[in-house]
Image 1: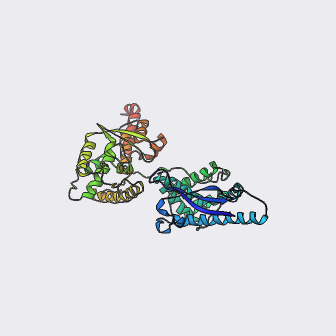
Image 2 (image 1 turned 30 degrees about the vertical axis):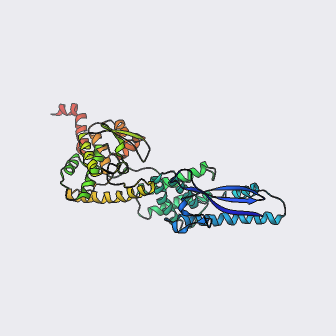
Image 3 (image 1 turned 60 degrees about the vertical axis):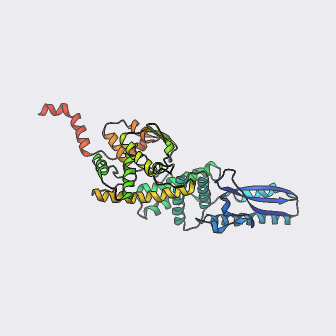
Length: 406
C-alpha cells in the first residue's frame, strides 16, 4: 500500500519560511517530492498535518490549498492506476510520472510561487511589484489561469491593449510588461517553456517623464519654514532636505538608515534597490539634521522615526505605510509654498541630479553619485533643461558670429 502525505520542513534560518513537500511511503521506504510553496511555521497545523487557514493573511494559503488539492489528486490517480495495472512499481516511478504530468506549468500559479520565493529571499520591493503585476494580469485573464506555453504574442498584445484601455500611461504599461517578461524569462531559463519572444511587439522601455525637479530656491524656502508646531510636517521636510543633501538618497534607504551606518564624517549604506554600496560625505546641512534626530531617536538603532521593529516583514510594512504618509505631507508642504507642481518622494532625488547637471557636473559623476548602474538611467532621471540654460549655452556658442553683427 502506498500512502501520500503533505509535510512541512521548517527553515534552518530563524524567521525564514519553510518548505511544503509530499511524502510518499511504500514498503517501509519513503520519498520526498519538494514543492515551490513556502510558509511560516505559524501557517502549519502540525497536529492535523495541513495548512492553518486562520494564519492566512493575504489569501496565499487558499491559493496553495488549490495547488495541493490538484497535486494530491494527480498523485492518487497515478497510484490507483499503477495498483490496478497489477505490476510492481517504485516510489521513483510515481515521482517521475507526477513531474511529467505537472510539466505544463500554469502562468498565474508560477507567478505566485515566484513571488513567494522573492519574499522568502527578502526581496520585498521586487515582490511588491510582482504582486501588482499578478493582480493586474489576473484581472485581464478574468481569474482563468493559462499555461505558460499559451503566453504568446496574442495574449501579451491583448494585455497591453487592455492596460492602455484603462487609461494607464506608457511607463505604467511598460512596468507591467517588464515584470511579466522577467517572470516569463525565468520560466524559460528553468526549462518550463521554450522561448517564443512574446514581448517583442509591446513597449518595455522607460519613457522620459514629466519634469519632477524643483529649483534650488524651493529647497532654501523649505529649510526656512518654521514647522516646530507640526512634527509630522517637520519630519517630512527634514527627510526631504536630507535626501537632497545626500545626493538623492531614496526614502526606503533613509527609512532603514541606521546609526551604525555613520562613521566619522561619512554615511556608508547599501541601496535597497540594487545592493550597491554608497559612501556620502556628511556636510554641515546633513549634520544639522542628524544631530536633531539623534536626540529624538535616542532609544532607536535607526536615524529617523520610521521603522520601529527588527522583524523584517513588519519593518517593510511600516516602511510602505510611512512612504504614503510622507508623500501626503509633502503635498501639504507644496501647498504651504504655493508650488504649481506638488513635490513627492522622488523630487529631492531629481532635483539633486538636475542641479548637479546645471552646475556642469559630468553625467558620469552624477550617475556614480546616485548609484545608477548606467548613465542611461541617469539621463531619464534628469529634468529637461530650463530654456534659459539652453539660451545661455547657445549664446556662448554663437558669440563669435554675434560679435560680427554688433
